[in-house]
Amino acid sequence: MKLITAVVKNHRLDDVKDALRAFGVKGLTVTEASGYGRQRGHTEVYRGAEYTIDLVPKIRIEVLAEDEDVEDLLDVIVTAARTGKIGDGKVWVVPVETAVRVRTGERGPDAL
Amino acid sequence: MPSGASAMHSVSLAADSLDTGNTAFMLVSTALVMLMTPGLAFFYGGMVRVKSTLNMLMMCFINLGLVTLLWVLYGFGMAFGTDRGGFVGAQGDYLGLNGVGVAEVWPGYDIPVFVFAAFQLMFAVLTPALISGALAERVKFTAWSVFVVAWVTLVYFPVAHWVWGAGGWLFDLGVIDFAGGTAVHINAGAAALGAILVVGKRIGFNREPMRPHNLPLVMLGAGLLWFGWFGFNAGSWLGTGDGVAGVAFVNTQVATAAAVLGWLGYEKVRHGTFTTLGAASGAVAGLVAITPACGAVSPLGAIAVGVIAGVLCAWAVGWKYKLGYDDSLDVIGVHLVGGLTGSLLIGLFATGGVQNDVEGLFYGGGLDQLGRQAAGSFAVLGYSFVVSFLLAKAIDRVMGFRAPEDAEIGGVDQAFHAESAYDHAAGGSGLAGGTRADGNPTGGHDGTTRGETERPGTSLKKVDA
Image 1 (cartoon, rainbow over the protein chains, first blue to last red):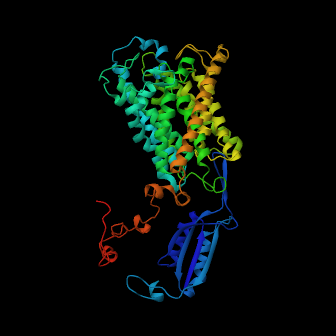
Image 2: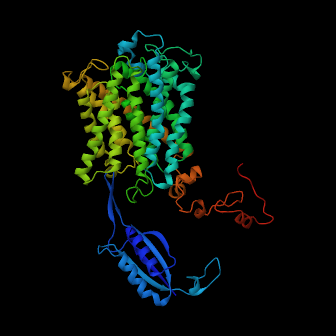
Image 3: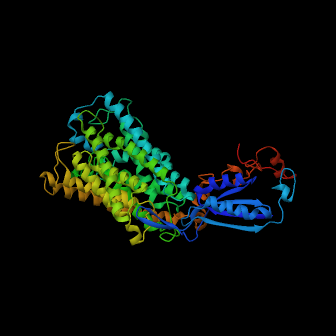
């Protein structure tokens, strides 16, 4: 089992979510995040005081997946999230020991 | 303005019986000016960081409590009682507003003493609230409250007498201040400067970004201020019979509009953008500048006053970064600079024929009025600055003006008010993980969680009803 984490532009969330659902993903977790990559930040002005805002708002999507689906899911996410402009985000995968469905106590793939 | 203007106020000079129209107008104007204090609280409250929001609101709101009582007890008498040496009203007059007749009319006018006192009260409430923006996010709430009590007593009540009280020395000098350019705005701005020299900068000033946390709140506050200001300015004529209040009303709108454009234009040239905060700030700068001048200039003059104030104040708010003082929300940049601008420009743009016949330099009046305006402005500036500085120093010595470091870093909302302005958790209070001091969890969705936090043998202490 693997955890796929994708940090994407806020306005790509709906497309990524719909694409994952179409693929058959049964659940995901979304968090508002902020950070920077090559895009860096932007400048804001308040009464003449200019502030460099380093951290850009992003959406973090987390999906648990079975090993054999991971490559396909990466393609699905990246295709749906891509705009081709700087700041499109990143996706990474880490191994997961197990997962438990809280209501039933099911473990492993059954809990997905 | 008020009683001061009485000598020049030909229409109502003869009046000594109550006029229903003027009284109704003044009751409405009084309520409008009252709204400016909560309006200012929002204007300031949106500009501070999240952790200081409630404290900022409270630093303004508390004045509605404190100053109202002081005004009734002795403030009105100090400001508008029988003159003593041009400096202050006799303090035996109007104590507790005791003995004032129900239909007793303010001398020279046709509105009740009670209505006049209530109208002037709202000015006394607003003026110390203006100062609070300079001290945002870093002073003890109790120390601030003590400062307000002492400041209105030693500074506002006497200065209001100088400017508007019958026999006040600035009034006798011929200084024109229709609604409070000197007594309110220069006064509050100079006091802010005195107080911040004692209190010092916020931790991280000029190093960490201190962005306004809620600009819609700032815009709401600016809107309420603009609305209330019609009562502040037009109401200051204390009547409607001769049309002067109408001119003041129009000039208030025109100058404010011009100042919004002036501030935005300056920003566009200097910083390349039109900001929301700039528009809101420009409005307040224009309102401040037209306050003393709204009964002296023409609508075209009001445009000049507004544009000049908008540009000057937009420039002045940057001084603090170069000079290294933390006037957090620009009380000096907007109220001191805007108040001086409006007061001095009367010396140039007064047309004569509105509130009185004084003409400024551009209308053939020479430099005399400009000199009088400068004398009045700098007298108030100097007195307010010195007394406010000493007062802040004394409070700092006795009880400490500044919040403890951990309170400032953690946020003065929690340190002094035990509250947070917003629940940021999407799931309501549940995600905040709170537990009531009596042991009841605030985040539970049903009764089952309650039992889990109640340990046997633990006595529950009720802290509220």
